[in-house]
Image 1 (cartoon, rainbow, N blue to C red):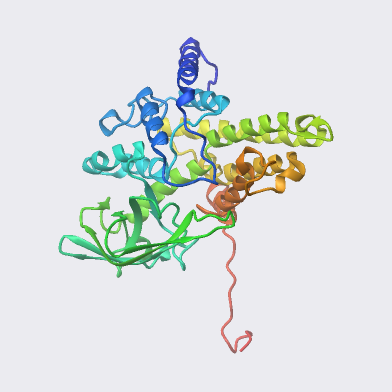
Image 2: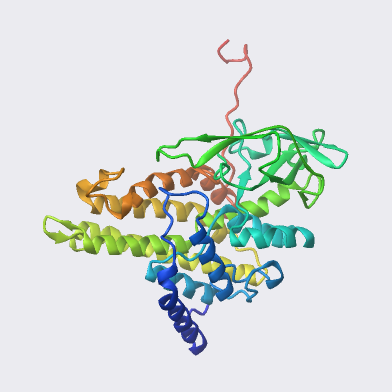
Length: 408
């Protein structure tokens, strides 16, 4: 992997810097986990400006509303670095943009791409993900939400849980059991569901952040068009794994960690402990240095994944570690920020001494949730060990029947 920047990339960096300097006054405030919700009009306007300039949705084909550039990992790296250094938002990053759009580009029909991608990348239609159920978390294929075809409509019944953003989303991509007689992995379909459909009820769940970011969603004879299916009946598990690939890559996105690290350095240069800057404290500085090394490792690993994708190769272990490594790193960055603030780090709600509007405290709790969401840490470790390192599967406990040594 050649990471040297020739004149073309140096010129591109200057182009990005010029755009940032000329437009930063119009950038909306960076989104924290304290104010997650429907994008504001300011954020939507900013998103359209970034798409037009090619700094987000850069490789989405122009026919579907994107900029239409060829994939180039060094250009992506430069964009992330310059926006992060300037401390401004590099565009919307919702579930639809991060997960649905690349899924449809990979397996959707031309009609589905034309209908859904343009509104997803601009934020005009916000998406949520209907995967987890009360009895189907880590074993997602055991889901019970069902759909039956009635003429030209799917009739859906069941329940989803931990559905991020369902209380303001316009659309959901959802896993539904449509083939009850098929083996569990082959009986699932991937449906696209308008959230305003009669028979859908959304019930927000309050988290430890004190806010409602997740929801329960109930389906009671909800009817959607028969054509709102991706890939075909019983193909949902295959499509879901395409989405999960992009979800885990998004949760471990190095751009997020780079921005978080840059904010942490700024905080530690401004905060003081016993009269000296936090960044001059040897213990805190040592932790910061270690986290910088981890952040750079995540960035380079991501470039390895992108290189493999561009060459049509399977990145293997490099992709498998991304979600686990990225989410745990972000939580470590949050923890250092809180420690660097000393006694002020325990503040959360509004107050005269609150730093960055409580963003670090909110991130600390939110990122702990992301370590669990999208495949918990323990599940990710098993995947890395078994699929990436080819280690033997963990033996399952055998419970003897009553009368054969078990307690009865």
